[in-house]
Image (cartoon, rainbow, N blue to C red):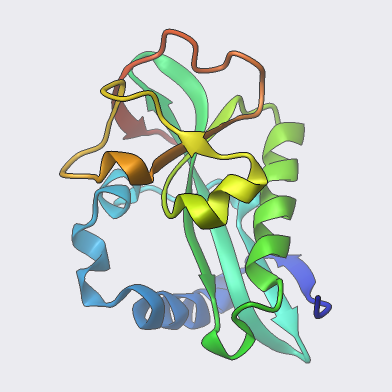
Length: 166
């Protein structure tokens, strides 16, 4: 793995992160369900991280505070974005692992994301129980993944995902 320096996100990083997101996810990203949950709400600042290599920003990860139904204490992961020039070299993995560790330390109970099981499964993410968690708009149920940071955090939990200010 290449060495990346992980730093907290700053306001000066936002244009570079937005450019990486536009490159990775395209203009249609704002219509996606996960973006609609995050719309108009700042991510959890202490969990917004950037990855740097040789003085250049190469990636970033953000988490937004969410509730599922009445169950608060969750996070929506995303976007996790990496510069294509370092894809496959460990930047995304390093950002994800550091973000999840900080989320656990901060007392969050679970993390939700819309993503690919082959990638996120190796970090402990599992498909959400069918029909229990609902995002605004359509989501492929096989891509709705959860990671419990506390054992049993999602036992019996169901409902609409909504973001809230943390």
